Amino acid sequence: MKHISPKNLKARFATEWLEGGGAARATADDPGPHYPSGCTTIFSPGWEVDSTGGTAALCQPMERDLYDCYKTCYWPAQVPDYLNNSPDWHKNCAAAVQDWREIDLVFP
Amino acid sequence: MTTPETSPTLVEATQMHRFSGGERRYAFLVPSSMIFELDEASERVLDRLAAGPKAPGAVVETPEEEAALRELAGVGAVARQGAPLIPIGGLQEVDGPPPIRTVVLNVTNSCNLACRYCYEYGDDRIAEAEVPMAMTEEVARQSVDRLIADSGEARDLQVTFFGGETLLNWRVIRPTVEYAREQAQQAGKRVDFSLTTNATLLTREVSQWIADNGIGVTISVDGDKQFQDSMRVYRSGMGSYDVIAPRIAEFLKLQKRPVGARVTITSKNLDVPRIFEHLMGLGFYEVGFAPVTSSPDQDYALGEEGFDELLDQFRDLADDYVEAATEGRYLGFSNLSDLLGEIHEGVSKAYPCGAGLGLVGVAPGGEVGLCHRFAGSGDHDLGHVATGIDDEKRAEHLQKAHIDARTDCSQCWVRSLCSGGCYHEAQVRYGDRFRPNLHYCDWIRDWTALGLSAYGRILDRNPRFLTRFEGMVRVESPTP
Ligand SMILES: C[S@@+](CC[C@H](N)C(=O)[O-])C[C@H]1O[C@@H](n2cnc3c(N)ncnc32)[C@H](O)[C@@H]1O
Ligand code: SF4
Ligand code: SF4
Image (tube, rainbow over all chains, first blue to last red; front, side):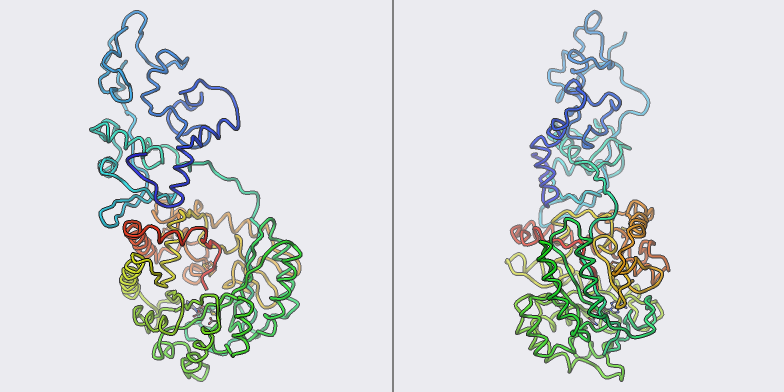
């Protein structure tokens, strides 16, 4: 983390846990059902909490979901129809994390 | 892709208290009690969110700020509006009431002093001590047995002797210490002892025994002669200062363990710097101050102005503390040390104190109560040491006392540290031990802010000083 730094023991502990992939590890220890990486659990498609009760293993940044929903993932999100009508919908947005504001509206 | 026109996802800053130390800026997060230092980008993000929830795009203007927003979200300082509050790491389920680690033995309810404010004898007493009673050796042993039997996996146990004047029953304390040591050893546990005394009975023999046995001692004393003698008097009205001063001097010379003084602050001795200087001069390692619990119409009651004045005096002493810490010295202002210890650890409490949780009080006759202040008051009995602690009642208490059950506290930013305040105070004040102590909430919030400010300054000037607090938070220690 660059912009905030943990100071007391609780904050240091939580940060180490998060940065060491604690949340991801907690998920790995308990294999549970498989979800495509980058997605939240099926019934909580928002960005509330992940399966460990934290936020660290969610699709963060949430903009990343955009492309996961676009090609790699089955999640039926509202991305433009890139096969026929809008092949270039994302051309101004090379890295969703940085350029998401550049994505234009698409009118069917 | 279409932009939704109604209710876009908004983000909001979660509850926090921001403070500074030197040039540095920090955020204390609620209820996790985590503290983060903020850089300019993260500060700007939080500033923009201070006015209320906003769309993410309205919160960040640069990639830097966007990264900051993401980091803040990662630790729960910023969240989607209305997202449920779930602590990182998940919730812990507790099966029934936890093991007992501490017993406070009210070894007598007689006293050789008659301090005017005392809750054991004064107007505000809860326990019904019609007959003066001393705990027998048998009841003391049963209490030890009970502690060991009910301590579950806990290895480090604590026996605290209390009163009345604790040392009036030294005859029982002494063999009980030996007995508890033997029993603990057989059970593969360790036991530590402490007591609180008014110092009148600290003869050379007693003092030497206390030193040899490494008993932790707190001495109740209210300041110099004038202050001490205004409230801490014998039944005849004679002050006790001239009796205790030489005894304290001799006692402190013999001890290896640091000894703390405990001062009860009333309107009659509202002068923290003067008391602090005097008691540190006598050789105490630490001095702790507690405002008197009393009904408002007592002439010695503190009143609102008194509480404000007390806070100002604490603030000055805290400044001295920070100065000392900057140079690596320890200034024995124990209230602040306790608070800093909790802040540094990041304690987030569901209960205000250990009463009924890991701690119980035992009355002279063996009746078990939430803590020493309650022990022996029929209403609050949790059983008897001979027959067992009533875990059902304990569970019921814990359920009602949980911070989440206290709606008055649910929006308060210090709730993870305060958790509603002393049950006994609430009982005295409102006749209901589960009522949060709302009469002193503003004060507690100001005091906590003061502690965070001291913490921030120490972080800025000499963070190494804080390592002394690592691994030493005593969640269960009761306030005397
Ligand atoms: C009840 S005494 C028992 C132990 C011993 N007799 C002593 O004086 O230390 C424990 C502590 O409670 C404090 N105390 C008594 N009445 C109080 C009250 N109404 N409010 C706050 N503290 C009180 C005393 O000053 C003392 O420090
Ligand atoms: S008792 Fe008052 S100060 Fe303490 S947590 Fe509740 S509302 Fe806050
Ligand atoms: S804080 Fe109050 S209720 Fe808790 S142990 Fe102390 S006297 Fe008892």
